[in-house]
Length: 110
Length: 114
Image (cartoon, rainbow over all chains, first blue to last red; front, side, top):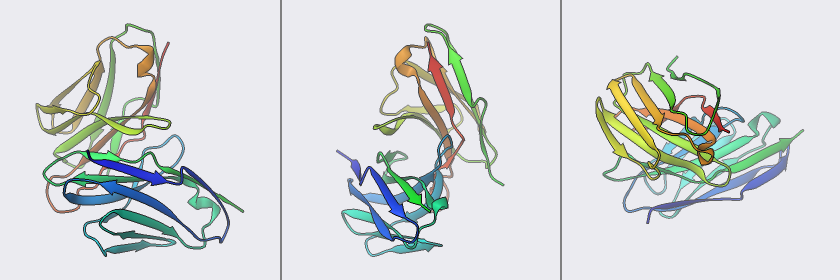
């Protein structure tokens, strides 16, 4: 069964304290792995797509990496405005469906 | 700026009412989706549509139906609302062309069924 597990469920960081969020997945043929950011009361906003093991994408303080079994979202020197829930999703080959993890709630303290 | 617009941010309905949630996208996307989001359960797919008048059941279609009469509009219908359908409902769309099939989400509708 296709599945996505994110850890930790919640993370509190001091401003400037770098860390990583994990997304483990099992899927029958990966079409793409997606990271989204969701602010309270809003819909998820797209961050990155990764397609194959070894691929990396960067945007400001965020860097996403992919292996055959998991993806990491690295946050370097976070700021309070990075506080949000980060969602991971996978799309299996030959399907329109996306399978989402339950997210990591990140809180960055000033 | 590309947009997915959901008709209501908050809705309060009574048990047994028929509820319509509307979603419109302005990106000419082929694919449209309805998810519900509950704490600890993440986003779960209710229905999706890959073309006008085409629809497929997602993981939790029971108690819901959908309508897609025009490419830009995808409606979710709760035939007879129940309290266990209290949730955040998210509409999304994506393009079938190209390799980057990212989802664009609306702002969500928080539905409370009393």
